[in-house]
Length: 283
Length: 336
Image (cartoon, each protein chain N blue to C red):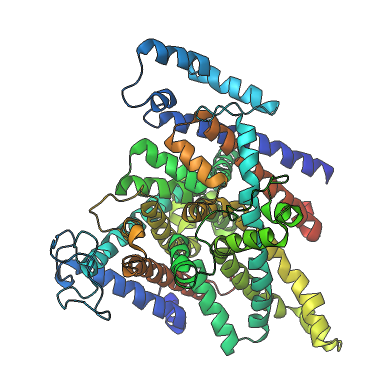
């Protein structure tokens, strides 16, 4: 752990990523105190006000207001809660289920392995956004259903990564030693092998965050994700599409927020990977 | 070799059956049904509903419907769209060229820019150019493309008026589509060069948007893969032999660096459809992605199960081709 932190600290990208992610996290945590207004409060007398750098702006609404008169800055700040929340839930779900499936696939013999891998092949062969759209259509559009849909389509990645690293570990001597002592499956795989596979899993989880946030925003954009008046960035963006010419900031700013958060997680992920395993510099 | 090829082919079958089964089952689990959708909210009288259900074969038990679907699919009959009453295969193949044209153009520009910039960044490591490539590609693959598309529309279409906002070709050109690829059709069609220009103009922004993530991934991948190879012993040997820098990089290093790029390229192409759904929505591009999404809304069962089976087959076959290419390029893989 200390060794990892040492490597991590040396990696400038990783540190920048960590700072950025931390910053977004703080904004999300302190949203009620940071936001000047309630994100759903309607100011009927202040519709589509421009942000502070444009003419006609009001100091009360730093980044302007949307088409029903809600403060954009407050909605963006609260939006970070929604996005991070989705990312977090997606990562928790895919990592836990994916790790179990990956472990099973690598350790329970060829029948189970084939079954799980074929299942993942099927998931990968289906167009992921379409699959997610159908899942949301079945469950109904809402935030939690977005999480379920996005998690299902990002499952194969985690399963593959866990299986691959367990397969490598499985042939090492310590596993053989453990086996020869008559250790149980649980003891060998969960207690001995799994901790050694954490590095790639951690990296994958970081990228899972950015993927989850991006996919959830795409869902919001298609009108399938968070429902109004939840301040979700993708939904905000798509709701303002018709005012793109008259009030472009309503489209520009939420998208910029998505981009910044996703970039932060990607930088962190890159840094983690380089720190944990300098040899595997894949995509 | 032949045996492993055959084996790989056989693993495709359960995948496709699974994919079609999931598509078949899921679309039926969506609340609402095509007949109610067609007849409107109030529905018709129950006798009409029953008759339509019978005509569409929806009154049979689900497993029987699935078997009929698979049986027909095996001989190339994917059923008939409930909404348009046209065969699903015809509908699919009339839209697929639009999506393919868009995808191919996006991938081409992603490769044409991504490869050279990746190579340059790797050769000039830690230079300004290198950092620029790393930074730009970081932004590129973090990009919410639905937003990116809108931004480009604001800038290039609304403000500058350079490119049209939607569609595939100007409405003044009444093309008889022969191949479905408008770039080809318009080139040889009556509209002449102007029609071709119009088709190109319509294609620029969608292709730019759809190609953004592949471009970023390819540039990054090329850079890191080439860097890795440049550190290997055989490159040092080649240099020590006194070969020219150009020869070492292009012939010795790049060839080996291309292996992971080919894999990623295949994966990207397969996942392009997700991007295509978003891109087609933004630019009203008449492709497969938008058609499928609309069919989910209309609960058009045959379209969904047929369309998904087509796409799944393509993805699976593409991956298979890449596997074979891999074996061919990289002999070590053959033994596995």
